[in-house]
Image (cartoon, rainbow, N blue to C red; front, side, top):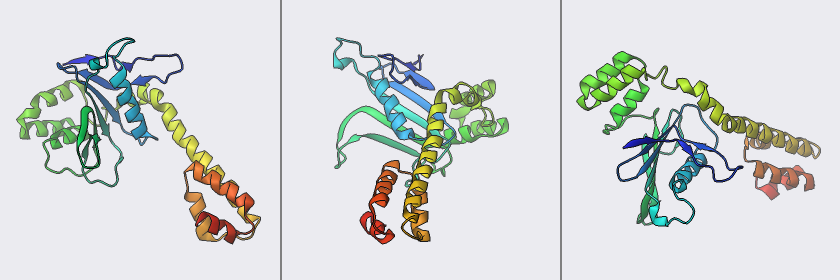
Length: 247
């Protein structure tokens, strides 16, 4: 196993740069991309798949055979809840059909949510290690599980306890992913503005019922808000608008 350059190759000037936190290449050439994220980030799943696709194709040069492509595994360590509909903190995704038959194992996605309840799985101690807030807690994990002693020693030497393990997040990580965070704020602002525009149009037709106003204000899908805005402009009455949009 070896560490590889985490900067994914750009094939043309305007292509979005991909930078993994850690890129490992195993002895069988399996590529493992590890991403760690503390704060909720807009479009994380799409971003994750984009990086997986880039990692998969990164090593293939012009004229080379597709047989050179190797298995790629994405591992996301998240300190926020991404999958609210599952109680499992460790979820694995592969390419399968509706009957569960696997197409290939070339792509595999692991999502580990650090804040979810532990289940007695062998990964539990790793989660405890990431969530540790003191060196004493790290040492206690090592005492209870001998297999974690080497890892705990590395944590001790590098100071990778929870209070400082994301130190770089305030430097190049925040700089690198700032656009995604800004995009989230920007999209929120756009959605709020579109909702207000729709309500202004409806107000010209009469008093907007509270439930309808709250429903419009809570919507964050800009495509839906655009449709509502156009519908409000064409409506003869608020009742007409609600009937057309099933609201």
